[in-house]
Amino acid sequence: MSDTGLFITVEGCEGVGKSTNISYLESLLSNQGVDVMVTREPGGTALGEDIRNTLLAVRGQRVNPLAELLLIFAARAQHLSEVVEPALASGRWVLCDRFTDATYAYQGGGRGLNTEVIAQLETMVQGERRPDRTILLDVDVSVGLTRARGRGELDRIEQETVHFFERVRETYRERAACEPERFSVIDAGQPLEQVQEVLMQLVQQLLAQSAAGTAL
Ligand SMILES: Nc1ncnc2c1ncn2[C@@H]1O[C@H](COP(=O)(O)OP(=O)(O)OP(=O)(O)O)[C@@H](O)[C@H]1O
Ligand SMILES: [Mg+2]
Image (cartoon, rainbow, N blue to C red; front, side, top):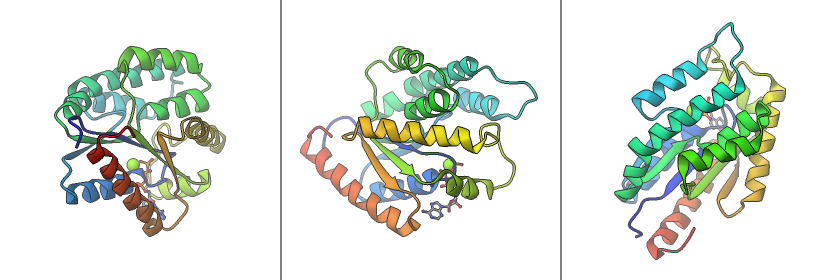
């Protein structure tokens, strides 16, 4: 087993099953004796959760996309230094519900912010830190939105148009295609048992690679 933990992020649009499958991954890994923690972005710290609430609050005023972007990276800086880096350094695996791919997808693809600006902030805030593996749960936007909207009140992001989420999904898929060694794309339109079957195989593969100390 390598000395540092693995940093695994789970991505996808609203309602694709991130929370459901992160819980499943957590139990799979714990059952295999892996010391694993679950966290999320934006959030994961007291400051980050405050920023999350600020970001998701429905308000009459338009939020400037750059202001939104900077708040997300402010939360990320706190999350990395306070939670993620110490956990990985102590050998824990970290399962994170959304990370910087979401920023490229939502603020880049969705809002149309310049990808280069996002990349600069990524370097500034994260240094070399990137996820070891990213699971992209991918399904038709309408399917995910129907699942998510079954929950009731919509937050500021959930109130966006279908076109916005189509751009988000497309950006996620493009990023996955550009980095096939990091991304595992799973068809989240399948019944949950089938999604979890794929996750079980993925966990076996990650454990084998981690034990062998080989690059992922
Ligand atoms: N493969 C699946 N098939 C059918 N229903 C599913 C599937 N995966 C998840 N669900 C259901 O869809 C709903 C949304 O799932 P979940 O909350 O895990 O999504 P999420 O990606 O975390 O959403 P959000 O982006 O809003 O946080 C839940 O009711 C969950 O049980
Ligand atoms: Mg969720």
